[in-house]
Image (tube, rainbow, N blue to C red; front, side, top):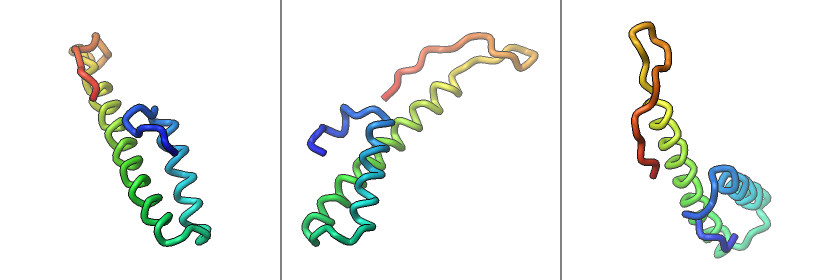
Length: 79
């Protein structure tokens, strides 16, 4: 849980977020720990959303020809 969020892949961020949710749902965390878990979970959720948005933008960057077939891509700078 000490890994900087900005370095996590989508998959790793999602796995950690799932672990945090399970820990919070268990009711075993102290109040302070719950607050810390919630804050990190919120940042992980945002990281996942950002990565999904970047993936969607890349998909949308695919150019189609007159018949609607993929005809290439245009440059896309992922976040």
